[in-house]
Length: 166
View 1 (cartoon, rainbow, N blue to C red):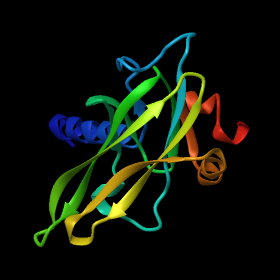
View 2 (cartoon, helix red, strand yellow; view 1 turned 45 degrees about the horizontal axis):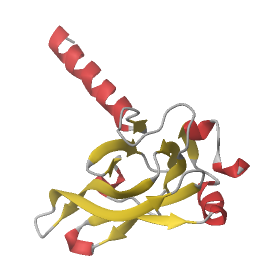
View 3 (cartoon, rainbow, N blue to C red; view 1 turned 120 degrees about the vertical axis):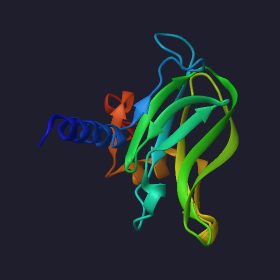
View 4 (cartoon, rainbow, N blue to C red; view 1 turned 135 degrees about the vertical axis):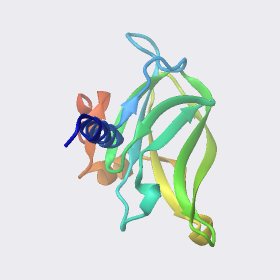
């Protein structure tokens, strides 16, 4: 193996490692760090019943058009947010159309978060058949969040405050 091939192989391995982990941008303008009045928001991405191709890749979650996190299947995380109304946008990739081309999908829903409250947002796939798969955020209750997250991996702040202990 020559040096160039080895370098390419190493870069591919690093990309694959990054592709499989949830990441949070703590510099987001709505993220509350330290003490203060904040809303605790769990973002939950359940596993799917079957393989969904490109739609199985990490999802991008934006708040008010600003990137917040990238979420992997079967993981959930906790983010402390400043209270208020905000648009939650889910961006994903899918294979769509008669020629099965890769396509970006985006869906947005408005939520209001109050200080001192805990919220659970499930990010669920919607199969649009030949139009592709897109994801919608849904507010769920604690009992549903506990059931849904039972076999999921808690990452980031959620590993210190798992849903099962609420």
